Length: 255
Ligand code: IPD
Ligand code: CA
Ligand code: CA
Image (cartoon, rainbow, N blue to C red; front, side, top):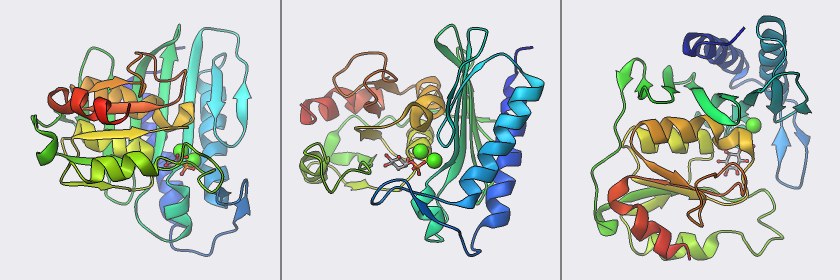
């Protein structure tokens, strides 16, 4: 059985309530890397999502952050980030979400990103637009880099990598109204779709960070590619999502 957008919405909302219940409590934190951590809420949200998907929509591949890849028997793929913004969550900063994407035959078709702190449900279905709590989303009409507000993120191996993004952060920080760092790539993309930001870029992401948010930004009218301009951002796992009026100007700065 194929899921509908309402199915994804329900799943994301229920997983979001698991995160909300655990928010501001003491967390059990484990380290996956020097600054890459995971809490009990990541695991609880993911276990819920995988359990529901496995029983209601069996047969699809699943790419989930904490349990990795589960090979399926059909051409469907689920992208699950059970808690995007884990570092915020662990520090009791209220910026995080559940991100759920669904693809068939390699094409992303459905997306739901839910922010339980603000009760904001971002959704999209390919070809049918993007929505926030049912209201249609549209990217900003900004066309000047100097009038734009951007957002970006930094990888978990920042301490040790050359591609730490600081060069581009500085470059764009000096040519825009500012570059924010919220700590949730999925929400960054949704906020581009909502016109709150004019653009987002990041390197070294994972498919579950950007699969759902990418479709939401696209359906809201953003141009979404890999940083080098190639259309399939889920392969190189870099992303540039911007309102069409500034997309080219941001890309030139990232070269
Ligand atoms: C992270 C967030 C962050 C981004 C990192 C991601 P996580 O995901 O989306 O904004 O900068 O690259 O890994 O670990 O909170 O799910
Ligand atoms: Ca993530
Ligand atoms: Ca996560």
